[in-house]
Amino acid sequence: MPAHTASEYTWKDFWGANASVLVVSAIVLIMIIAVFVVDRRWKKIQTKLEKVTGMMNESYAFSLNLVRHFMPSFKVAKYQFRGMRPKKMTASVEFENLGLDLKSGKRVLNGVTGRFEAGKMCAIMGPSGAGKTTFMNVLCGK
Image (cartoon, rainbow, N blue to C red; front, side, top):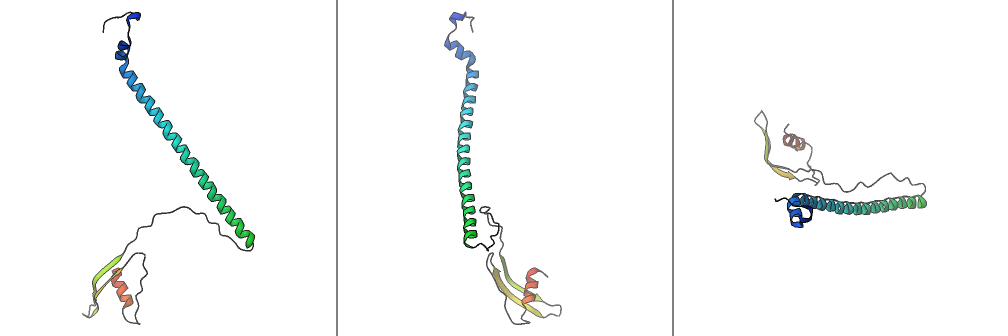
């Protein structure tokens, strides 16, 4: 770059000499604006959540007072809704051709097949001596 006096220094020379500083300054400015926008949105969301939580607390207190007013002798258990929780892991049990041969060679269970589905109630019924306990012991691996 040729040597210039102060009066000969042009904008083109300035931009050429300081381009990297100007680019970095622009990037920093864009990042500051992005952080500012995200911060404003975050504050707006938090304000809405605070209002909703306050309304929930007020409605809970109102319902307790209502119950106490109409039924003064009624005890209200302390309970606070903690939100929705995901379901816990479940398991289904399926078995096919389950059987048991005793040491004497006698076959007690033969070809028992079934399925216990998670979340469903199941009953094993039969008269005394039908093999309900034996079936459960075999199913559990005893």
